[in-house]
Length: 120
Image (cartoon, rainbow, N blue to C red; front, side):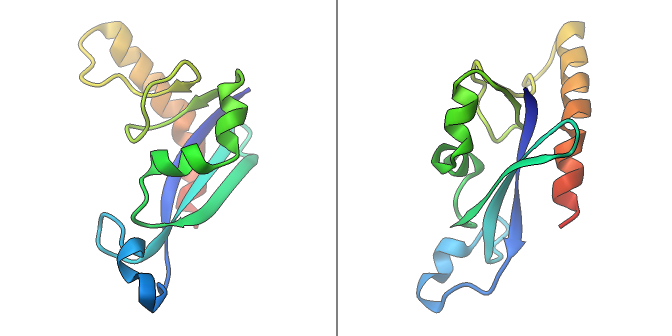
């Protein structure tokens, strides 16, 4: 199964005793929501239990979907995720035509998840 993953920040009013933990990279308070969807725009998993200061990779490691994809499923992520056998990411600094073509195809297949998280 091919799926895509993305994180998005949902603005919140943070608890007064933990405001700093909820501040994301843009300094606004949020919850970091991870969404995984397949190419048919079916949402397979949502994880929205971590403060905005948490990195997307941390959320992935803590979510239930991590074990599913380690067992042989293929997941496409953006620059915020490391390249793994089961996690495909863009090629940094593509120099060859093959790398450029791969990145273009990667962007197209991730369009589903980008569209879904923009609907919030």
